[in-house]
Image (cartoon, rainbow, N blue to C red; front, side, top):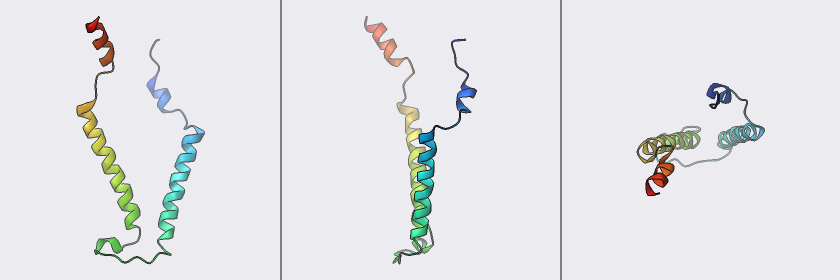
Length: 91
């Protein structure tokens, strides 16, 4: 009775702010891809010449940073009651 049902909280619909942020993110991605049609780029390497390269590079870089942060978090995280244990041992 003291614990909340985690399945129910995960199925809760997104808040209005969360929905607006996703819409903004999608609009920025579309704008980024659409603006490439009007910009003349001078590619330095062969791979950066294809359409949408910098958008894909940004998304992949963000995903890699998130995965690296999660991996580092495995080593840096503490138990949930870490500070409470410290207070009881000092008292």
